[in-house]
Length: 327
Image (cartoon, rainbow, N blue to C red; front, side, top):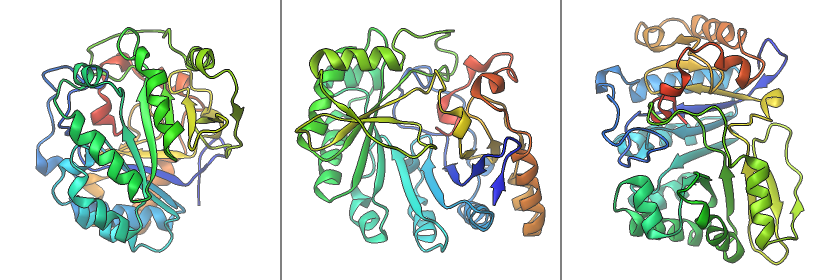
């Protein structure tokens, strides 16, 4: 079992498989993109398998595959087939922009990978295209409807961006009114590849909730595990739910159970902090599992108490890009 230096159990791994993405959302990276790493710098599928197995042996029982956009990686399904058969994983899920997932939906269902976080920051076509800088609205929407029809547990992640998509907050809630999905609104975070700098935000979680209340004055708060990052609500008569994630306010740090490993092997114990180590050389040198275990335990043992404390490790945290951090 992995226990950090603040006595928090770490059982949730967010494993990035690529830093590449086929969209160019400006809250994530500049319009020209970033300098993506060369393929030989990425962890191979075999290395990702060894790493995942080792971490499951240490008590990780929940894995979310992230990117970049995971389905940009052509051999992703090889990894997913392996992980779906790995004893000890209680939950396996994927975060995706849903542009490329279509051809794989039926196999994902057959593998039992039914939890999908779908990044969708607008329900209006024009807003979507302005944010993503790409013409992929129909593909995303059609894949979303297919996922719902096939019975996937879909969480729609909507980052609230000042002067950009606030007008879509109420309309996108129609999805959870009509379908059994969760629409979750996230505060904007400062990981945008240096395209924007900010010290505070207008659309913090309380402001988002107040805005929703103007249209839906009656909703009830739902119970959630203490490790949940989302504060969840139910509107009477709606098939789904909605939630608020205070990703900038960082109200959930005290119960954080997450470990992040980037596509290049950086071990990140807090989204706002610097990498604590890199596992790529250990994996490529095929060190004994005990050595890999010790390295992970040492990284976990120097974890910041909160995201605000971790941010002090940086001199220019705002120049990081979410696609390179791993979501």
